[in-house]
Amino acid sequence: MFDSAPDPGMPPSATRRPPLRALQQSPEFARALMACGQDPLLLEGTLVLQRRLPGGLRLAMVNRADLSNPAPLMAALRRRGLGHTPLILSPETPAPQLARLGAVPLVTPAHAALWDLTGTPDQRRAALHQKWRNRLNHGESQGLRLTRQNLPHDVRHWLFAADAKQQTARGYRSWPIALTLAYARENKGQAKLFQAFEGKDHVAAILILTHGSSATYHIAHTTARGKQLSAHPMLMWEAASWLANKGICRLDLGLIDTSRAAGLARFKLGTGAKAHRLGGTWGLWPPLGRLLRPLALLDRQQMDA
Image 1 (spheres, one colour):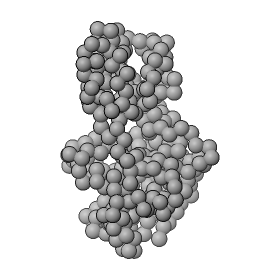
Image 2 (cartoon, rainbow, N blue to C red; image 1 turned 135 degrees about the horizontal axis):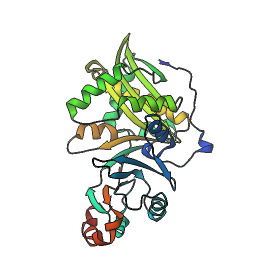
Image 3 (cartoon, rainbow, N blue to C red; image 1 turned 180 degrees about the vertical axis):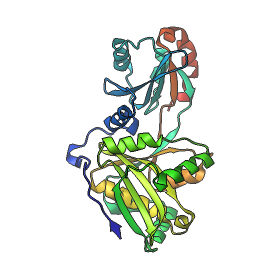
């Protein structure tokens, strides 16, 4: 059973898809940041964040952007008076060309799991790994009730509390709750909460953020009972099916780490999602670019695809 709620702010149809881009480079994300008092810049189609460090030093950050040709962005930064500002650059794909600017590798590339939602439901189901499909079949036989709604503006929602405990236990940090609520408030209908219930008890939830023709798996939690009922695969499948019906063609499941979080990586890739290599993290201080170029070129091998 799947209960639905009104869907204001429906994503654009497949016939009017904007270019695929990561959440961190979307206008929706920019609106949420501005609602929280930040001042992102949009330069040459690239979202640039700014931060003040102790002592007043300004830092500019670019995350999950296409930096295959960084020249237009660098020129735009100079025009905005940021030509001498230290930069942290995290490209969407490997960008060894940044070494020629004098950018120094800081963090080697990670991988994100990207789930292609195009094709028919039968094709997506056939692409599931066998163990994942078995768990989905098990969940579908448990009589769970699934609901879908816009994220309530409630800082005390049970999913936020469960996620906070999970972050502490696993040693990671996600968005502040205020930023997630701002995203929902500033982008009507684009923060979708999917929940699974056994009777009146919630056993799992997933929060999906849509942006253009893409979506991002933002927060999820499954109770111990939900794991017994295979609620998470069932909820994930229903969310993906709904997104595909709305013209969303890619679901970003987030970073995967096959060494420190192998189980989670297997779960994400079990959907048929592909491991997408990101571009790592680079540091660039333009005034020193020419001096640091030899060092950057020596280190670039670890950042290449």
